[in-house]
Image (cartoon, rainbow, N blue to C red; front, side, top):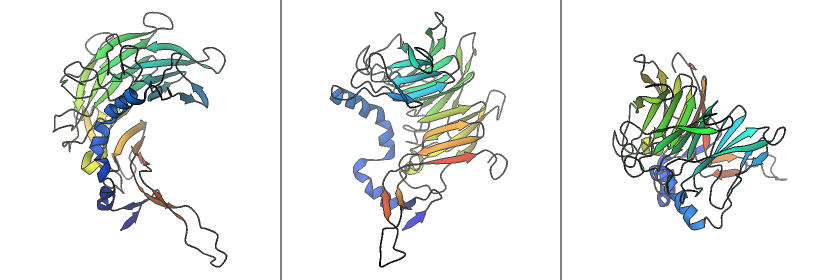
Length: 361
């Protein structure tokens, strides 16, 4: 049986699609092993692979010390005239220790994007994948190293750099963050987002509500002292369950945070919206759980999330189905059946608007 969605895709039943994917494993396995698979790829194929490059306004930019297997461009973020690019498999301090590059507009010429600085962790070590997630807001850069061993293996860490710290054009390390309840395997720093003085960090393998149920942490600038970033709260889903991987993606805009849980509900996926000061002055309260109106097993809705003021965009990378792409020429039949094109794991994105359909919806 097929059901048509608003975006033109036709989904098969969950049972049909699940059967098609049995040889590839569950959605939770995909996300949990993402870092490990990429790490192994860098080990095995590093000598044969390109270093990759990022593009900005059709102008490619690359690292001055690019090398095979670095995966420059794995994560990117921009704020006004500054761009940061993650290269989590760069090997300056050991295989896949990772690095991040800062580029500035008009450095090296008008409209040129010149490399300003290469950032690395002061305590960098093999396998950290520093640069796996990056975010920038004005003069603050946030970098995730989810496979860093701090409070146990792969507990994860986040590093905060500030512009002009240590010199005019320098980006200096201000702070290394770990969660208040850091534990082995949490992968704190798998996703990061920053808006002004507020930072959100995802830890999708946190186990508070069961194995890899996930969590997300909110930090505030100057909380606990000038220049400090203090933890305000830990976010968890109201319907948290084992293997949800809540915190695989995070986004923030002013007083609103969105957190993706792409492996929830049989990897149909969901996303949660939290608001500042809901339930108390320093509290972040859950206002809404988002899901796709045409959800199907293994879609992984919530694998990526973004927010800008009143608009939320949610990625569902494994949506499958088919579309009609045109009608073949048929001289003897003026209305031949349209061509049906199968779209396995084509993916889709969903827009949501605040107060669309009623207050707080």
